[in-house]
Image 1 (cartoon, rainbow, N blue to C red):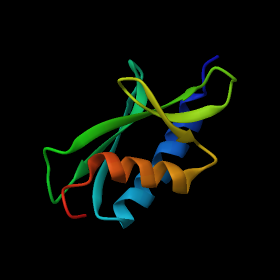
Image 2 (image 1 turned 90 degrees about the vertical axis):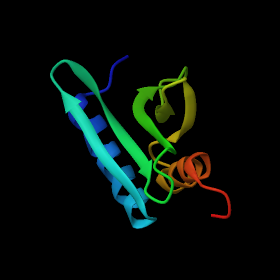
Image 3 (image 1 turned 30 degrees about the vertical axis):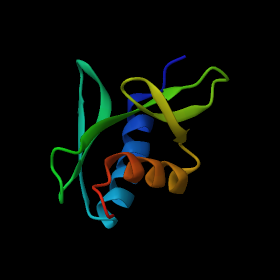
Image 4 (image 1 turned 180 degrees about the vertical axis):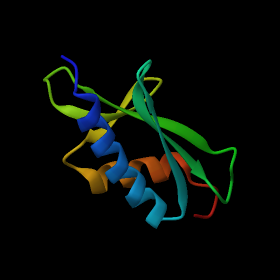
Length: 94
């Protein structure tokens, strides 16, 4: 099952806005030759960066994923997703 790229972009934009409100840099990457993804960078520790994508899990629920692949959270649980991305990219003492 594939997600509509525009729907994926919409979810990634929402995630990016929330992460930017917490001090991260978030840049949407999309194009005709690639699936949309969000590049997230901890501006306080730029080596701490990661990509986030949107895909269906085994039950068909749309979720945010890290590329290794690890499920972050369902797209409907935006606050949980933001917390988990922040935890992965947090510098010591954050």
